[in-house]
Every structure is written in structure tokens, then in C-alpha cells.
Image (cartoon, rainbow, N blue to C red):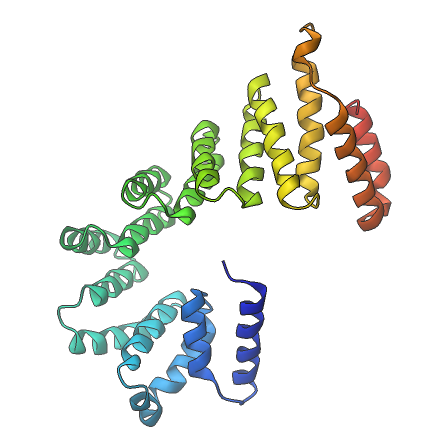
Length: 300
């Protein structure tokens, strides 16, 4: 994830280059380091260097990295002739390179030859089953074709090998949520919380999934994770505060007729409601009446 400082640094360099102040190579290096894809800028700035022989040769071996970066940016921008030219240069320089082979597969994707791209990727994975980029390309290709079941299959196979990839777990969870496969999504968020327990986003998403599943036990756990989200964000997460109130209301309905010991203390929901009202007073005073009515309807 790119920090605000890094993003502002990248934006500053972008403005500098656009205003004729130089720094195109520094911008491209930083964008590559941060894994930020701004294809239009990468293509424009990259070609300005590659089309100038002095600038290009001054880079030394780094020029090949730039050819790769420009090829990917060109495919993103559908400038396929530019991509083909860059890949041809790399093929000539590195005829047996698997990395160049990846670019060839991506070009086949970009031209719509997905069956050929799949064959190319399968061949590359036979040579190197641990190539993360190829695994991810297969997932991306399946999603682009609308083949969600294949995307799930490839993601699960990928995660069997690269279990610590947080982005892959999150993507799989979001796919499951979109398909209303909430139990599977909950499992993915559990993995994310285990590996990154201080990220409030995962606590919140897990709580949302459990709340959607319903049933008393799920609601009780959801309430705890909404509370942990509030704790991790210093009480600044409005969605988690509202989640506490919604869970409390739903649990009250499901707990009717149960023993008093099974019922939870109203203290937490009361604090959440007060915090919500305080937030709305400061941020959206004109919506405070709507919030009050909503909370009243929840009997909080």
C-alpha cells in the first residue's frame, strides 16, 4: 500500500516532468518501486527516453527494465504496436528469457488471443511453478472473461503455494462476497486477521460478513470485531459504530425468551450510539435527525 508521503512525492515528480523540469527517469523508477500503474504517464515519459538514443544509452542495463515498463504501459493504453516493438527489442536481447515470455503472453491477452495466452502461461509454469506473476495473470484473465469459477480455482491454487499473499486472500474474499458465498469469505478474512491482526479494514470486513450471515453466534462475534475495529481506529470508524448498533438490535430480536444471562450488557451499544451522534453533529449536522430516527427504530 502506498503511503501519503510516497504518493505526494510521486505527484510532485509528475508535475515537475509535465512542466518541463525533468525527472522522467526518477518518476518511472519511483512508480516501479511503489508498484503504481499510471500507464499514460509511464508510456509518455518512457518513450521520451527510449526515443532519445543519448538518454537511452545513458541508462546502461537499466534500459531493458524501461523497455519492459513501457511495454506493459502500452498494453494498458491499448497502444499494441508500441508494446510489440518493445517486446521485439527484448526478445532480441534475451531470446530465452522467461520474463520476456511473460510479456509475450500478456501481449496475446491484449490482442484477444486468450487461448494462446493460456497455452503460453501453462508452458511457463511447467518450467517454473513458483512464478507468481503468471499465476496472477491467469486469475486476471479468467476475471476479464467473466469466468469467476475459474478465477476462484486459480486463486485457491495460487494460495496453496503462496499462503502469505494478503492481496490474494483479500481478492478471493471479495469475489466470494460478490457471489454471496459468505462462509468462504469469512474464512479468507480470518486468514487475513491472523496474518495482519492490526489492520482495521480486515476486522470490519469480517464483521460485515458475519453480520450478513446472521444467527446469534455470528452476530456476537461480529459485534466483537466491530468493537476491535473501533479500538484499532481510535473510535473513528462510523461504519463500525453503526455495526455495533445493528448487531445489538438483531441480537435482541433473536434473544427474546432466553435467560437474562444470555443477554448482553447495553453499555457498549449506548456508547456507540452516543459516539455516532457526536460524529454526525460535527460532520453532517443536517443528517443528525435521520440518524436519531434510525437509532430509535433500532430501540437503542
